[in-house]
Image (cartoon, rainbow, N blue to C red; front, side):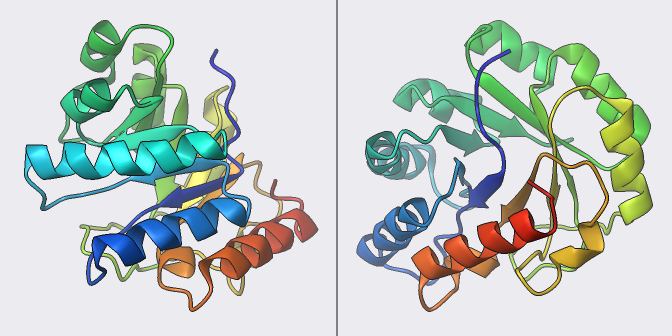
Length: 211
């Protein structure tokens, strides 16, 4: 399996930011200790998505952090990103693996144990499970119980990350569940100081023995 550290997984949200501000915030998050970076763009054209991905990838490389592209295998290929993350409505994991090969990281969203087992069998390298809490991002969310999260962690041998409305003040709900890491969007992206927010979230996760 590819080597990657999912302990602090940052998912971007460029809404309401200029490109300059967005890229600054991404870099600040990386300086704060983000270990895996996902570029998520639901509303950009393919050309716009690729253009932004190239800029984000250049920054991520400076910090030796893998770039994961949300949804779009074509965009991941175009910028030679380290991986892609796929949801239930996207290309299947098996299809993406055929296209991307064995060396790329492929993550999947899972909300049930059967789905987790299915995408694992297709070759997923890690899972994102949630939403644990309601989110403020413009993404359809269905809440996932911590019991389901725990069951998924036990069901598959690959890293499982918790996602959905998580921040340093509420991740104690995850204590004792054998996750591999925390996924954060707004807690870092919308923070006054993204670097500080990343540092504090990581420290709190370590205090709780989550990572």
